[in-house]
Amino acid sequence: MLIAGFGDNTSMFDRLENTELARQFRLEPYDLPGFGAPPLSGETSLDALALCVAKRAASLNATVIIAHSVASIIASLAARMNACPLTEIVSLEGNITPADAYFSGTAGDYPDAQAFRSAFLPRLEALGKKQPVIRRYLDAVRQASPEALWELGNDARRFSENFMPGDVLVDAADVTYLYNPDNCPDTTLAWLADHPMRKHVLSGASHWASVDQPHAVADTILASIQS
Image (cartoon, rainbow, N blue to C red; front, side, top):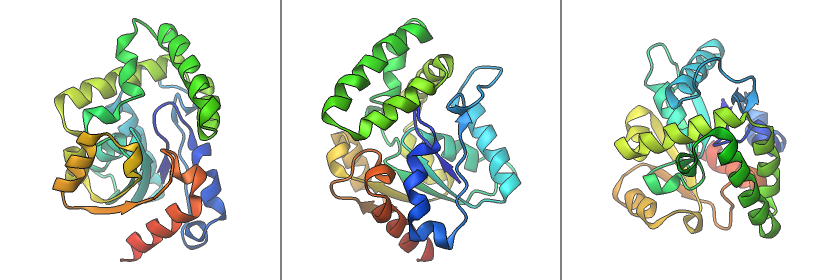
């Protein structure tokens, strides 16, 4: 399974379809409710999305999930649920410390969904002028449910205030962490240095490594799974 991070959809994984990973494994992109799929009828929370992921994983009998950014938390919570077959999480720069919620965590600074969207989109537009990889992300965020975006951001912030996401991640499943240190806060790099798990550096990759370095991502995942 493949799930995207905050405000994103599975278009971020499109380029993996032309890699060796797709030739050796069946890739199942799963758009989360509100982010490429119809939003939930109730609140969009980490737990609610995790339940959706767990049910989808069970229907596929999927044991491995590739999760980007805040979706690593969702994958962690799903893997801990009863009857969920997920045993391995490949985290693409998933949230490790509260500092990693540098997009999602800002939702709590705004009183409602529209106020957050009105501030978040111009921020991404400005970043996209210097970082082309963000332009695809901006298009995905534009398509996301504003309410789902704001609710998930608030819940991700609350979660990181009460738990260390990295601790939850390593307790949930067998983990492979892919990252570019240049993209990570100092607190996250310190946590990674102190905690043993499979880690692979993707030099020069953006936060969306599956977009700009799909073959490196695929080869690293294959080597990890086969080991």
